[in-house]
Length: 222
Image (cartoon, rainbow, N blue to C red):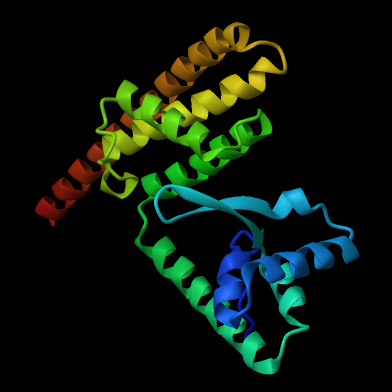
């Protein structure tokens, strides 16, 4: 029997677990805190917020597969089955979405996750912070504020990804040697690398063109 690899980056919120098991969310939160304490895990590492209603937020725990399974191991078989079934469905959704996403969108998601993590490490931890930053970014790139990322063109995706990658670099470099000292060097080397890459690509195109021409000539002579 082939075992499927579990995506450890996928999480299930404590609120969703509460809904699946018909438990009060505050009781599930207590269960999670108790579990994390017994496992000697740092609770804030799993803590987050979730929007609901009219711009309201609530505290939740976002648990990876391992911690979710440990938590529900103390629940009844029926309740465990509901959580396991939901996790299987989440895994299927991830697989389907990965098959449908273009390389540009996959890279955009990866860059956004890195950017968000860096922002959080530098003190941006409220929903309002991320909303304001997103608006600033969209305004700068002339993308309508109400336009969802799923509706972005490839050009808008590439611009957004580049902006977030550079912003992440800026925040990190601030703590190291200084962004404004590193940026000119990095930009110059990026240009040189691009020129070199472009040259290689163009040479390859010419070579392929010559090979195709030679192949056609041989075919005609035959």
